[in-house]
Length: 282
Image (cartoon, rainbow, N blue to C red; front, side, top):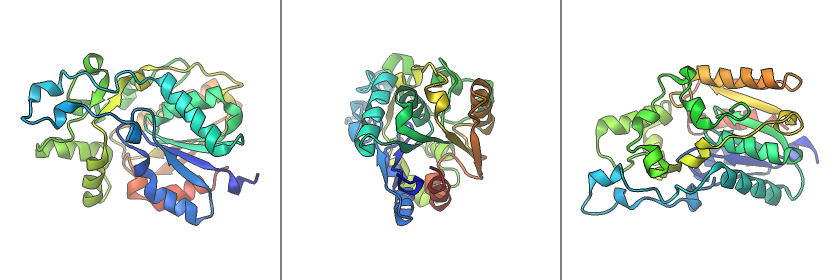
C-alpha cells in the first residue's frame, strides 16, 4: 500500500464528536485520500447526556450533583474501541491516526497496544502524555496555566465522574468563555453551531487513565505534533513539553513538528491547512 492510499482515521477530543472533522474530511477526500472520522467512547453517537441540563423545571443545583451517565467510561474502554476501529477501517493494514486534544491520550493507548497498525500518529494540539502520566495531570501542569476549560466546569469531576459544561447556559459571559476556550479564531456563527453540537459530559475516566509506553510500542510509531500558537485549552508551553518529553524518552524516534497560528480548533478555523498537513504524512 502506498503512503497516498493509507487510510486516515480522525479522532476528536473531549465534548466533541466525529462531526467536528467534516470540513477537513471533505478536503482530504478531494485529494483522493481514504479518510473517516470516528466517535470516541462516551461521545457523539456513543454519548449519554445528563437529565439535569434539559429537565423542566430547571433545577440549577442538580447540575453540580447529578452523577454522569458516562461516569463508567475509562481509558481502557476508549483505547479498546479505537483499536477495534483501526482494525475495522484498516482491514489489518496500518492506518494514519490524527487525534485532537484529549483524543491524544486514546491514540497513545491504541498505538501502544497495536503499534504495527499505526503507520503514523498525528497529534493536533493534543494530549501526548509521558509514560504512566494521566492526561488530567497534564491539564494541571504549570505549562498549562491560563487555560480556560477547567474554569468552565460546572461540577466536581470527582463527584459526578465527568467533566461537565453547562451548554444550556444563557449567561453571555460563560458562553463567551467557552468560545474563547475552544473556538477563539473560528467564525462566530460556526462557533455557535459547534457549541450546539458539543456533548455536556466528557468521561473523567479517559483523563484519569495512563499508559505505560515502551520502545517497541508507542515509541516505535512515527509521530507528528501540530502545535497551535493561540490555543487556550492546551497551552503552547504544554504542547512544547509533550514534544520534549517524548523526544527525551525515545530519542531514536523524534517528533516531527508542524506549527499553526490557530486556536484550539483549526479543523474549523483553517480546515484547508489541516488537510494539507495530514495529507502529506504517511
